[in-house]
Length: 116
Image (tube, rainbow, N blue to C red):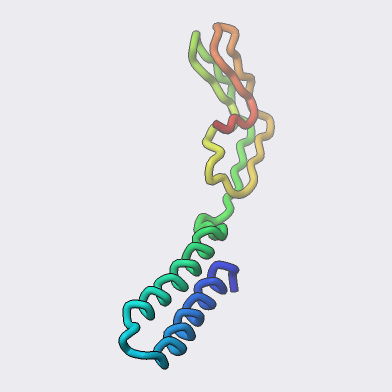
């Protein structure tokens, strides 16, 4: 069971126990009882939200092999390997025998992995 699930279960039990204890008091305290239940639930949800969640995205292996050459023009970019965002990246990346990347005209070139 993950830490997030444990926190939600404990929060539910704490709200139920608090409600049970406060139900034994005077019924004229309804607003106080409801406020106490909401406070206990809010603390539990805050702890739950602060814990890191598990990503539903599976790990993915990316492999680039034997790519051809690439040449960039002025202000352009060329990549013979792998280019992509680093955010949300899960899994492994492998670039083998990538082609030549030429930026002799003033652009940017990469023959490996270029994470943005």
